[in-house]
Length: 105
Image (cartoon, rainbow, N blue to C red; front, side):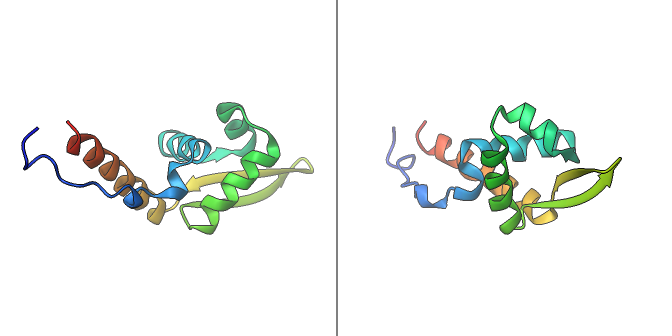
């Protein structure tokens, strides 16, 4: 590796909100599927209601996802989708990971 390619990568640049395994999965699912309900996210991520809710709340608090709750046949239906700021954050996350990989080639 040449001196030019030995650039220091600051791992603190990685977005911790997205980087957690379940949150990364949620963001990826929502970006590829579009609007998705809680039950589908639970099935896709293979996690518990409580764990999924915690991760969704963290993404919602960061304004990376949006949520809409409604009732269908007296049952609550919760739909999630990625916000514009979430799309931007995910793009930046991918660029950061790519830079990390390319820095260490």
